[in-house]
Length: 436
Ligand SMILES: [Zn+2]
Image (cartoon, rainbow, N blue to C red; front, top):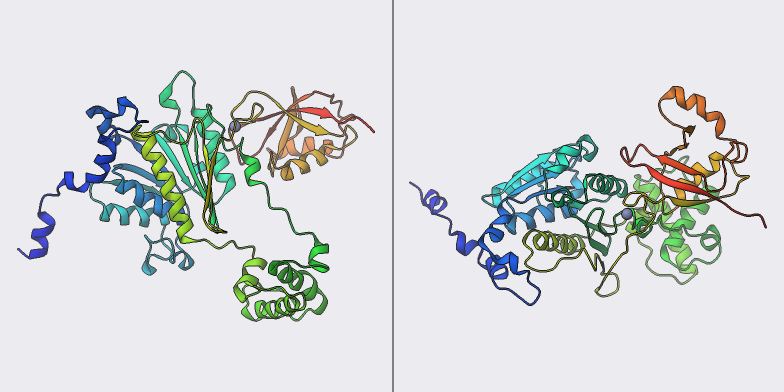
């Protein structure tokens, strides 16, 4: 028998392995829930089934952290495959993994490194599963970069939650990063403020007005936008802009640099030019590590009750590493007219002379709605339905009609649905703007 085999066969000292974790769990502090100290409670972590959504920058960190925090039954969903550009921060992937499914490779890697953990990968979309699938977990952790996916899982977990059944309430721990900024938040579905209540925190970024770009640039990005929107159109150095062609990007970079010099602005670089025109926010490995760590601490606290977690009072932690390090934790309150977690209809301010099409267009840009493909009906009447095609054909003549022409009244209850949220109905009532 070789030395290596002997070493691997030596019994693993479980006490030593979990020494520090056990110390935290067995040493009560002033805020420790006394019920968390019984042997039964201490063993509960072994049965806790966790769902991780996303196996990218945050997901890799989350899976590693959860496995090393003694969680034994983890599932992970991600539909993406590994791209070479992921390798600088998604540390569970190697060059030979490029093209393979993220969820699968991440699960295998962590299972191999941390003995005793089972990680089940699902290489698909979250929408591919039904409510019964989500019912099997105790806690859901999201490491996503998509707002639509967050909204989908949020509305699904709110639908699952029933007031008189504590097991049906699955806490949602959500992490997100953008460059040097990030957030970690805990949502207790149907009880505390949900992702939809907090949707305005993700309002689409305001575009820089063209006049700023054309006349008085203040930031290096403004110079790049000038080169991109104005100089390119005027000079047309190549027939069509290809943002992946280094020659094209270099042209824009040189133009932007010259403009920046003219206005005494520093910071125009090739990579900034590329990032600005492609609207890329750099992914920062350390931000992911910090946010994933915060999320996994919350999962640990939720699962063990050893320390109070984010959730009931303060539920939202924001982190900024842009200008030194700053964190702020606050309570984001539940909205009484949230379309997902409350039954109350939300007002929609409309001009009675405006058309149904105007209203549908406004739902896409309204920061509190952000519904891109809305269908709408009023009590007993389809106003506009995208599906099925027959109904679309029958209702599309309503689009150019005004609310008055459609016979809708001030205070009229309307229901909006969107294919991105299959189960959720958004309840609104029309509030006519008075003239003058
Ligand atoms: Zn809500």
